[in-house]
Image (cartoon, rainbow, N blue to C red; front, side, top):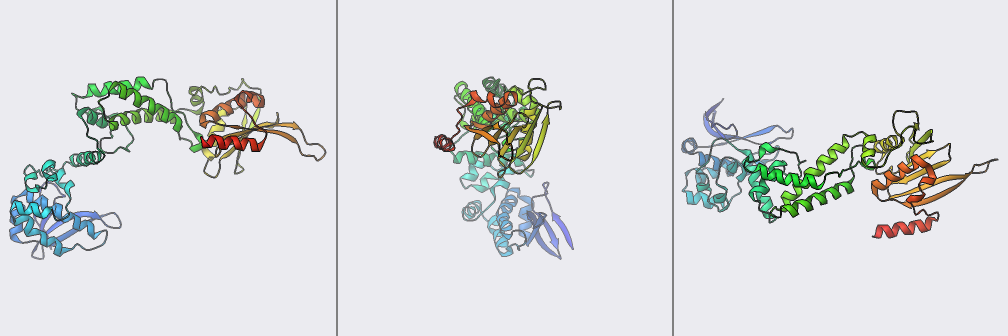
Length: 420
């Protein structure tokens, strides 16, 4: 038989129950192996109940001291009841100075105290009883999260000013720097919002006209890391020039916001439009003499493109790459069988080969090919080369050289580039 004897407004603050005639403190903490909340109990006396009823601060301090014991019990272990009971008199019945001294010796959970209104300055100085004078029954988890976010920043030597904090709250990154940024003006003090918007306007002006293209080598929705880095550097430099008082955390979060929004726009742009925005001028149905192209990968997959189809050859090819590219599948080919021409893209080496048929095989003889190799500068370079080949074939690639027919010469050039 279990009866609740005393409970507070917040359901998480430990309750006092009577079970089989015995007073116990009951609290929920941690989770079991199935991620269900665990409940712990341990016996208390009438004198302890009297303090718990009348003194919220002592009640919360006891909770904060018992929580580490619950953590130690793990997902299926038993609470160390002797250790829990040993905390009752020193926390609930002792003088404030003795309680402070105890908390300098034991492990305790400060986040619960901060969430319930503890004075963080006094907590940090070890004056736990004084820190809890303004304690509230209601919990403010956001307050605790912000406190610990500030502590982590302080450990890195970063102290936020009011505008810095407002910018981080605007982007939703005040608590967690790895969170995808977003625009949340309602999270900002209205008095500071105009200043925040001036910083954002500086960033928007700095990256106007810039874009972050997609990189199908890394998947259908992956974006170009170089474009990201270029936009990030541009925005951060402009913001630092215009607002030198901002700390690095605030500057970086604005750059992150601009890049994330640009990447989102790119991911939601059709491939044809993405090519146009990148300035690669994808082929249209009537702008090339090619009637059909064949796309293949290193795993034997093949896809055909026909000129009278609904999409451009470049869009079809990059979609094929985005669907098939992987760590063990980094060689892709475009071939025009009718013209006897093709290109082979080597993503693992940032290189390409252009191939043309010099003589068809006759009478059982093998065909004769000319194969030339070139170095490629990132996904932008690949896009240019693919677009040029689709529009004008083997000859159109001449201006994108140098091209090397000697494999040893090409490997030396590739090693020199990689060494740089």
